[in-house]
Image 1 (spheres, rainbow, N blue to C red):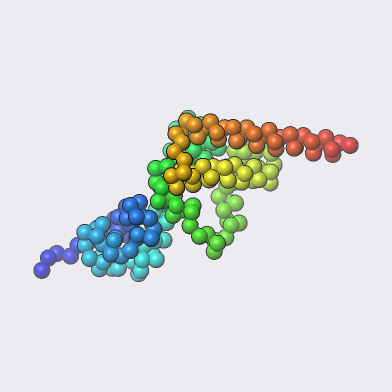
Image 2: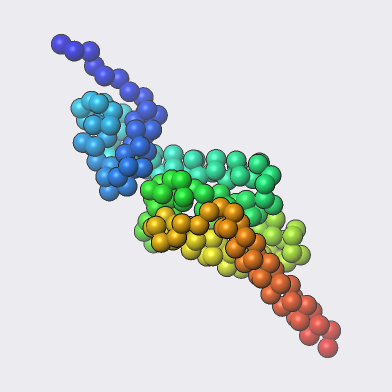
Length: 196
């Protein structure tokens, strides 16, 4: 009788990430994962209750990888911190297309949007520091900027665009400067109206 093949949860999740990278989340089946591991499905279901649990672990692992992209880009110091977060988002889409789709192009209608705002506080603080905007305006600024960044990322991940990172950096700067100009002028107009 051959020895039992033993895997850890971490090894199974790593293999599942590789399946998603190759075939997307719809390709992550018990059979495909077992083939990636070179075993039967038994070791998978010995450590996980079902494939939904595997998918949740893959989602968490993909998010951890994305967070490492942000940290790496911000620590590199090539771009200002706020811009680095956008560049990391786009780089992640470029280099980890299927994981990007899993995180940012899935049905999220059942998720609570308000909880995301708490995660944005460090980015909002950067915008406030760089523009002088209050938190509410910084949030609107970020949403507009994020729509632009997300648009570029999705066009890259769907092979509609193939821009290099240098050009992407330029267009992000243009968008940021344009928004900053608009928001700061708006603030000046509102301030002068309050004085009348």
